[in-house]
Image 1 (cartoon, rainbow, N blue to C red):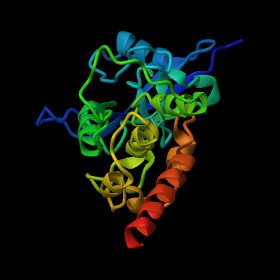
Image 2: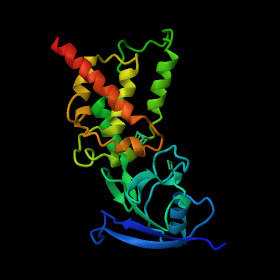
Image 3: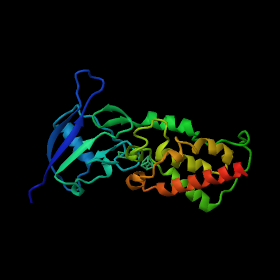
Length: 244
Ligand code: SF4
Ligand code: FES
């Protein structure tokens, strides 16, 4: 059987080069069995254009580096089989992040700023005591925290979010998930009133306009709809307590 010919239309732009202008460039490739976009892009770089920029590390949906827009939808390139795509594939970098070049974006700076904004670490009640006995945690709660911790910081949910694309301080679905993770953690000393100040504003849950594309695109299938519902309920509960 003759291999299918794939056409890749790839966004090209080097912001460091004053001569460079954003444009689409076409490449063609013969499809291989079980070919992923990871494989296809590496073949293009090896055989047709060594200057093509894109990011990969684990190639198994674990590191979160390879998020990109595939036919307008944010997804992980290493997890995408070309057999699931039409003959022509359009690739763009994730929006909402600083462009490094072509398909490569800087998600690290965004995630670092978000982590600092929401205080994404356990705020302890007492100084660390290495001799203290470990506090047990309920299995169900530990599982819920673990579920939130499965986020690989790929940025797909951020790229899909209408608000994150226009409001730089919005903590976005990945940030909401991070807040919920520490809010649930009984080792975190922050009170509901402390959390209220982090989450109950336009940079937090009340900035969300409810399109919920984040829930559809998350490659780790994190329950982002439930995360928003959980945060809204907690925020409203605190608001009523504050009023009482
Ligand atoms: Fe990626 Fe999902 Fe984490 Fe968003 S919540 S950064 S889509 S893994
Ligand atoms: Fe690591 Fe795709 S290369 S998630």
